[in-house]
Length: 103
Image 1 (cartoon, helix red, strand yellow):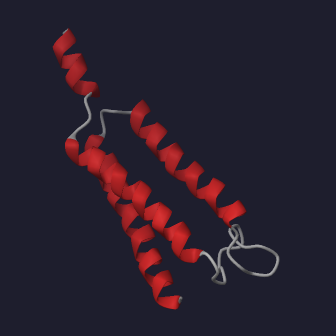
Image 2: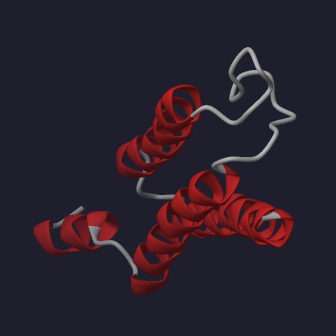
């Protein structure tokens, strides 16, 4: 592999960059929209059953960060990562939309 081909291999596509932004924004909206509501996920709720920012933010940030690190470590699968980002981001966005209707 010549130097130019190697650089292209690691170069990120515009679509992948946009889906990363979408994933991060959708995850942040999901967390914001859950504030003050009862939480079904036991990992994210406090003893009173309410959504806990102190529990949810580190978990969600860890999941998103892990995904972004994996994308960086395996750059040859851009289409897969793009699909992953859209999928996870869509679930988070749909959850946020549902949560905002509950306020």
